[in-house]
Length: 139
Ligand code: THU
Image (cartoon, rainbow, N blue to C red; front, side, top):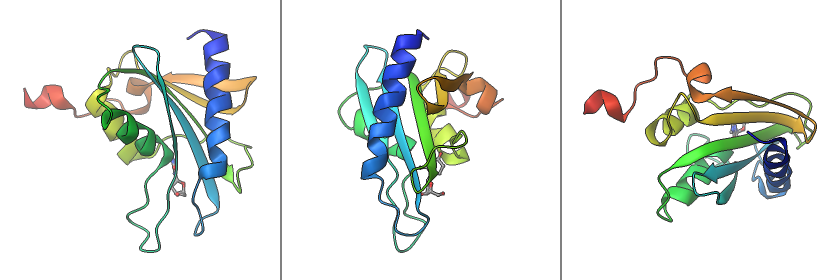
């Protein structure tokens, strides 16, 4: 992953924090998802009074993209923090890792965790979801 692109994705993910709907946790998350063709889709977390219908920022980005015909992805950037203040990396929850497993190659899909444009680390999906269960298991 080129540093300039990582910076662009972090900037875009941070911009999404303002849209996060978090009346219950106050924990705001933003995501920027890159398709293999180079298009970026954004997402924020959207909470719900019944709690469990809450959608994470990563899944919002994936579902927006897939609902518009995208199926191939190369990277996602995730930022988050209480009241939108970025102090630590926000790693994707297990459900989001599983959604990534559906559409992404675990060896090459890059997950960028950042707290700012100059502070980030990149992991593959395989590193965050070792021995994941995916479409290949059913074929
Ligand atoms: N959340 C995300 O959006 N992404 C993550 O990777 C972790 C958790 C959201 C869900 C909920 O709105 C809030 O953060 C607290 O769990």
